[in-house]
Image (cartoon, rainbow, N blue to C red; front, side, top):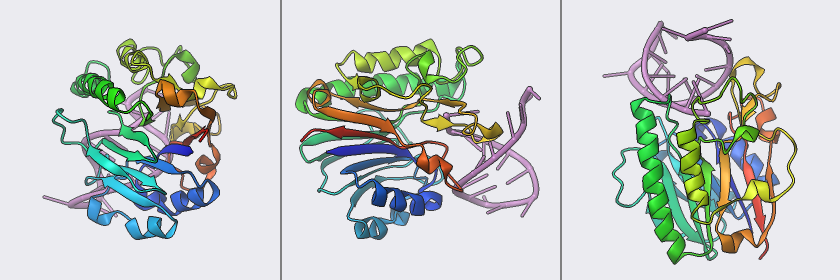
Length: 255
DNA sequence: ATGCCTCAGCTCCTGAGA
């Protein structure tokens, strides 16, 4: 089974690239973030033509998440149950016996800001809910745009970016709290190229200079981690003419 | 450099992203 996550930064703009990518990478599940569209605008027919059914939880202008899958998705949930949120950030479904959570974590903007506090609240709510999901679904994957680096290895310039957004100790603590549930970072189960990042700023030739961050993650439950065969970041779509600022991350699990 | 680029929208500037 192959699963992937990709923050597309507007599905309207990126749809041709997503279809092209799926043709080259026929994964079983693809989680999308930042579709930036309402459900009525979602290109259901185009994905159906590519062999994918879709669950979309969208909104106008910002956010919006989707799960594309070859097999039917059941037990679908939107956002974190019990956590009131106006923003469309989480879509969850069971596909081929795997509980798949696709999430667009809050950005946080700046440490100390209201948005940063919201991010920390959201992270706490997510952890408590994932704890219960994990108890019911031992085969679980939590993947998406986390907007958090694990540590300095995920940061192109950890000195300059120390304690800035995505790199603060509070955010990293919240990320480790997810790991404390037993989840495993699929990326670090395998040897990776040095300076592996999943996002590069559009400005200042960030991609060309590999000035990036690893903020898109795939976390696996212990049962699934045992079956992991590979995990990689696909930088190819970032070389397209109008790329998303994020690259897709993929994981392959043994059947 | 409160800069750099990209996207959406009550669109020719602003807010947000990260």
